Length: 121
Image 1 (cartoon, helix red, strand yellow):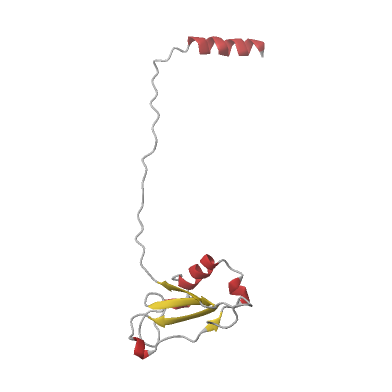
Image 2 (cartoon, helix red, strand yellow; image 1 turned 90 degrees about the vertical axis):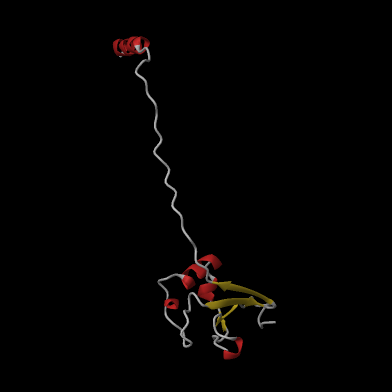
């Protein structure tokens, strides 16, 4: 188990998913900072994996930090692993709604009502 479970210490590390296990291309296991723990986990992952982050460059082994590395987060004996996978986005276009209007409506009652309101006003 990882140390610090009772204090709620979260650990993070990563390794290249393309290199062979005996090559040991991995990062040092580090504690997640208090500031990072203040973010929601979803926001933390978004910032970590966004294309604007420093993960967009290549590692020492020549593979992409963003696309080729496996990311691990651990607390005590629990570990979660995250791996990049491409998402295909689709666009849905809905046609504008059309109201059918027919001028065959008898408007005599409406004209009488308008005249009545006008004279009372």
